[in-house]
Length: 275
Image (cartoon, rainbow, N blue to C red; front, side, top):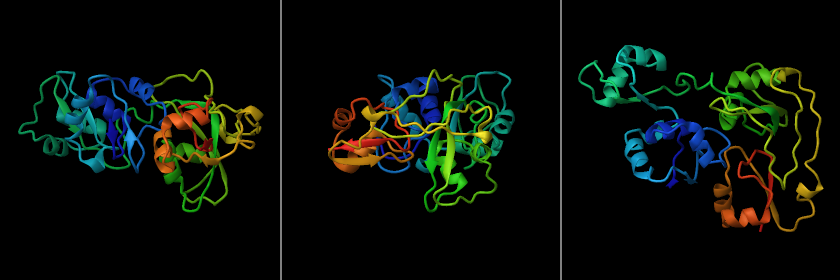
């Protein structure tokens, strides 16, 4: 289904009662845990889940869909106070957004949880597993540590740690090392390279990212676009094949034809041929 608002995949998964790993597998073009901030996005859901999603997401304000969550009460001993504490909110806030008249909640109740911007649901940060290889990103005018971290779906403190940064200011042109998040605790079998691009890789693992000594390597002549006719497009954070196709007035199928070995999982810095 086509959506025109950003939404966290974990909220989507909670709306249709599936695990987020399954949802990520259905949407491999996403670079992060949220859909693009601008434009439209083709959100893939399990068969038959569209109506269930639309009904659940309608209860969440459009501008809150990257922060708010659903919580299913599974334990008889759970209380509004304990749930509010877990999510760093208040029982009153939960009561108000759910229209509750009492603090007692029955098992299997599904609650909307209003999480303040900048806060995270339990386990969101802790559950992140990071790629063994770094994506390289060159700072652009206006970038800050929080804005870049947000674009790549990583904690700002991790971005600072990997690049020995202090504060939020970034110098235009600086090269940053960013380890892509693999939420859900999934191990990465190998770095997924998107062809038709030229990228450098860090051969260090995130166990000691602050001492990165990168070794640059082109993917190979067969994977570059230097001798390809037509326009090229360098992928930016948050872009997908769908959004790029819309920008250039083409189709996802056409992009795939011109970039036959390109993975659906795009990364910032990938270069696509546009015809």
